[in-house]
Image (cartoon, rainbow, N blue to C red; front, side):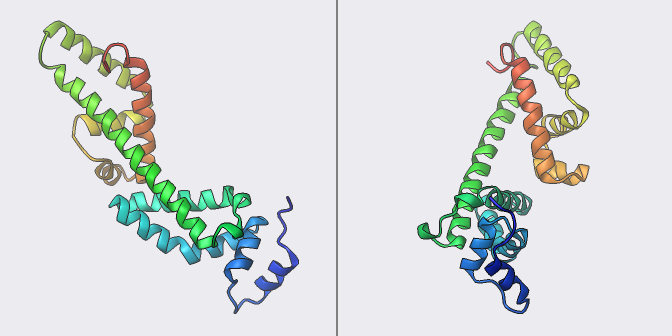
Length: 198
């Protein structure tokens, strides 16, 4: 598929004072015209962000979802069919799926953090020998993680900070904090599954 805009889209873009209609915008987007993606972003990003913010209750997470939605729009543009609905409706559908993904990921992270935190808390009680062994295993595996993942998980487990608070303390974007937490927890889970995450 050619990435050049069609003559009709080029002609429409030449009329700078006249914004593209939804049908022209959709044709240009499907044809791979980046200017049409930018126009779609200008037209619908505020709506996407508002829907994500209302559902997730977090402005930074809503920004991440908004970026993911328009990345999804660009990557999935060949799948858009005007006969199935408007371009705006299609974008809202992608938004709903990305919000659902974000909520599911949040639930998984919460579950993993709760499981790891419970095991760390249990390490101080019960059988002293197994508690010592668990602490040694967890600390040893935590030390093997890359420094950013270690930092995020230590702030989570030992200082009881939320991911938003970690982003504020480190100066990292919330999405970066979430990525480090997700990758670090995945590595810990794989390495500690038999002994700690029972």
